[in-house]
Length: 114
Length: 111
Image (tube, rainbow over the protein chains, first blue to last red):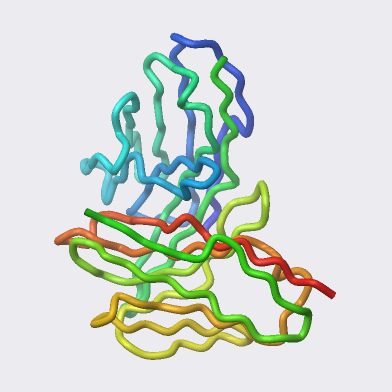
């Protein structure tokens, strides 16, 4: 399975602060994603990247930015955090082989914005 | 728009069979995924369907009907550890560039 890691695992910050969430993977997957999960709303896609030079907005990109520094690294930034960005954030990678696609999730980052 | 519907909660008995339904309306379709997620943990991949029909993996099976915008996840021989949320997701968009998740179905397995 893909080894997808996220740092930090938990973060408390204040309104207006800039923070960065890091994601790394060791399996060489080209496709990477950032999601947030809120109770009752399911997972929502923030940004995705199909390659190092490819960055695309997802459903809820406002207030977020990303950087794909290398194939293995995909970072999510909150330029000026606000309380409604309090959520559980997941990074994921995916790979297609023989017509099958599999998506692997990192362990998640719990973010609290005060 | 994109919309995926699942029942919010289901309850079943250990050893039984349960079917979790998912209906979707998306712009474009490039595959449907099922994930299991235990509380506070990351989702884990269960199955992928891109063609109509049934895919079986041990105790878990997933069915897809693209013409009806419908899928189900079938769990057999339920175990207590199967208590979790089950997420249905569709790869949508003209180029399959977007993942859309349903709200998840919380399954409780009772002894």
